[in-house]
Amino acid sequence: QAIIVMSAHWESQALEVSTSTRAQTWHDFRGFPPELYEIRYPAAGAPKLAEEILTLFAEADIPAHANSTRPRDHGVWMPLLHMYPEADIPVIEISLPIEMNAEQIYKIGQVLAPLREQQILLIGSGSITHNLSELSWHADAEVPIWASTFRNSVVSKLNHQDYDAVLDWSSLPYVQRNHPTLEHFAPLFFAMGTGHRFSIVHSSFSMGSLGMDIYRFD
View (cartoon, one colour):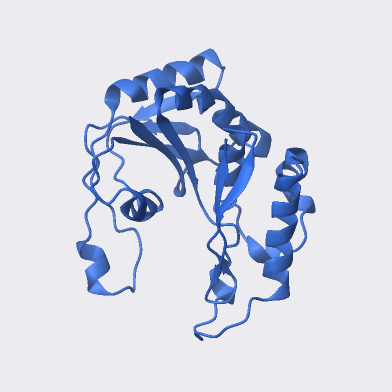
């Protein structure tokens, strides 16, 4: 019926919810081939559902604001382009509130989890590892031990439903090297809140250390 995405590429002070009827496709990156900048993802918004989401947040005492002008960043349209290329499912984006800690972001997922019963898909769009300064441009680059160790540690904890250990992210091995800033890891906290049965849909590394994993929570 609809897709709700928390993207690493929309950081805000407080939680925000996109309420537009149709957001513009935003190419929020530089230095890539011209073809990328021609891509459009014209999926409709869902203003009525957005208002329901804002009501759910209010009932849970989570401050949140409507945003009717936010364009759709590549943390939303790039994965959806592969998942639903026809762009025929309404999309709502919610921001990553930098004022919130891991437990509070996890709670956002918990608050929205019941929407899954209405055939609404919840997505946390980030990256299991994300240190752009450490990327290798060699096609045969090996995965560095600090990246694989971090990824394997997170997966092990999720497999054992040790969510508290993941939410206590500062204790994870090599966390600072994998995430010099937290915004690409934090959407995982949101996804964890939406379900309890963890599974791996896809797992790989690109450019040496860039984790491309896809996880599912049911």
